[in-house]
Image 1 (cartoon, rainbow, N blue to C red):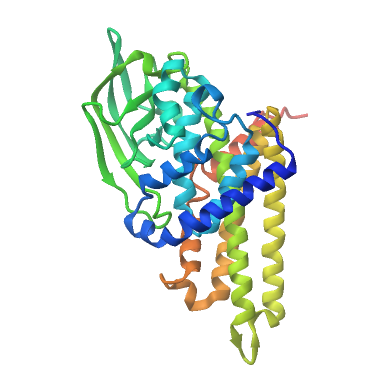
Image 2: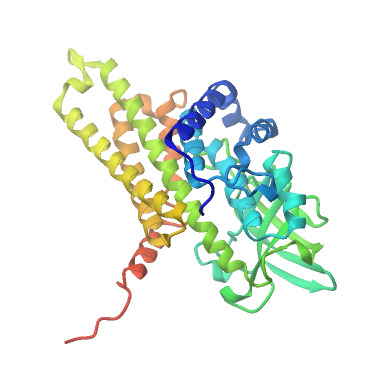
Length: 388
């Protein structure tokens, strides 16, 4: 939260820089990365050299200490490549795995992990979700047992973005008793003995972002690799989830804009019954609904960003933005795919990728059901009502 503010001119200058980078270094390679199932290490190094991986990282960690508005612009411009897996992989590294170490880690952790991550020399992943615990973080079973000056970690994680390419995993593990109060966050280098990468998971979409199962078989790491206080992990995870959800809201809005652009272009070019598809009122009205949904989602997301950068409590507003933007993205994807007709079902077309990449939005960083629960609690809807 917080960070150095910037005027509109600085933000637009940054946008122009990222847009040129994406056109030069990302767009020409997207198809190859989608086929490979991952982005190359070279992308992280190039982005690190330009400072893109350390936008919100403090100066001690080698970053610029800027606010989330810069991250939002980075996401929006990366999304122009038409492959959600690219920004997902970058954000999993820069925001999810690394930012929490910058926020609460020791000077040693910042030196050994954050600085190389900002430079793109080490790639990070966040290890929270398990086969039996996703939204219910307090039920995590991966355990870290103290042995002298070390922690010995045993457990399994699933759905880990960057899981096959990461050099370190910021790992949630149980160092205390049951429930949320017994969790810690620990940095685990992936060259630690006993660390195992399991299956590379095959997904419907976001192919350019690798996703894996990982396991810890008595992985021994120094206890000083704990991020923040021991058994203080739950709070750090929840704070990180706020940012993850804001990232997903920005991604969803950007995805909707790209889908609408593609659908509008197709609707003007495709001739049916002697006129363009957008010459029919039914499609004019359906696309009008799409545009209204995009602007509503964008307004909610911008409001959440505005609160976030001031440091104001905004968990509910972020959850609202994530809920509305991601649910709207599914509706927009369906409408935009429909105007393409059979072409939306062809793998050679961009619309097919955009459609399938949208399907995970309502699941990642907390399901829509969890977002509704957060919103309901924040507005007192879960308190029992006394009968009159």
